[in-house]
Length: 209
Image (tube, rainbow, N blue to C red):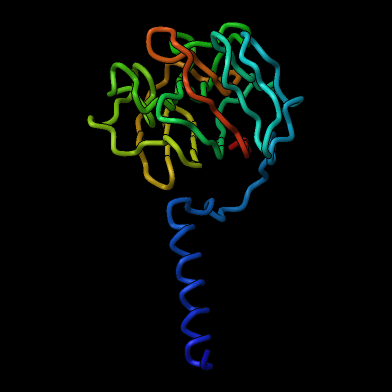
């Protein structure tokens, strides 16, 4: 192979590497004091568990794929804060991040903001990227999470709630119903109670504002 051919081949490898990263944009380098709760599968002991989901460490992530449903619940209460999480979901995974829940034993969309991860939710307007009962997403859903690693960023500051999925803003609203509380990571049942797909959490970080 000539020198020029070797250079061309090397440039092609670099270009392909950059293209492969394009679907998973880097976190904003905005400074601040982030607390890492999950890091490549470690950190399960940073949460309390409710429900019967079979949470475990597997393949560099915290995984659940069986049970009627459950949550990993933070051990601290948060008011104004940000979460960023890296997760993998199947198209039929029913999961999400619940924030500002006053009761750490009873987590639900009636008592907290549920930022949803569910590509095939029967009512799609509150599917992936939406806040259930508060902020819908356009239908058909364009920001799908199934069969890939994703990055979700949530900002809760005063009454303003912002959700980003893979760098795209899916929700930006003002609502003051829930002011502070615990946050949780969900594994839920599928459509009509059937077993849904797995959820894998690879990174979860939080910081107060």
